[in-house]
Length: 277
Image 1 (tube, helix red, strand yellow):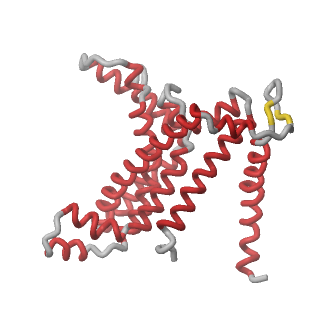
Image 2 (spheres, one colour; image 1 turned 30 degrees about the vertical axis):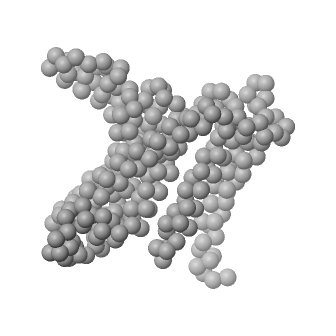
Image 3 (cartoon, helix red, strand yellow; image 1 turned 180 degrees about the vertical axis):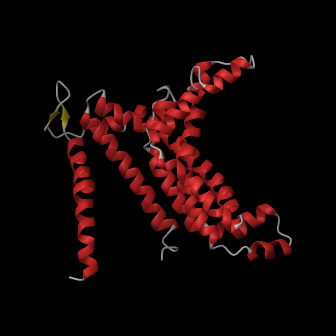
């Protein structure tokens, strides 16, 4: 056995024990039934998947897809602008900009979301300022709404989009932009015909890195949305922690996992196959 293969053994063992085995356990539980007091009874059934495909749960999944799409699109637009500005800045300032993007990751996600919640919440700095200026507002609508959830999602996952694009922009030949301008191309023509085609792989990687965790996110909607709108991640969490219906929660988890695997498969086969390597 080659030394390279020997070094890969611990990684494969870790992946198998802490990724594949838990996934297999979830799949097995999804075919079981819920006990009288919330336990698991090993009576094999497809009822959990039948319930998971009900219109109510599919509607929640659709709402989560819409939020994930908006989050990914917002991160893509902001990520392109930010990475473009960072890559064209003076060399001495680029490390500072990269550090500013990465710095929030040094703080726990829950702490960051709670800080945002306190800032816009009741008697928080934002509401105190509006009261001082005698501007009327609804404190509950201001502190718990869909826009705030989207804002929290975008600010959380934006670095996953910026960093791949920044790496691609650093390798980008900006003389192509000058050549396009000399030929009379406008800003939009340059963006869609010159810049984006050269950033395709980095942009698609950023889309995957943002879309996949956004679809299953439950902490941010729960803290910033006030549980007003049920999303798929919150639905799965409640089945495990509150309803104690582990088989249904497992079935919902398996369906979401299959959806995410399908998106990844389409990326590599339909969009990324020609660009890999």
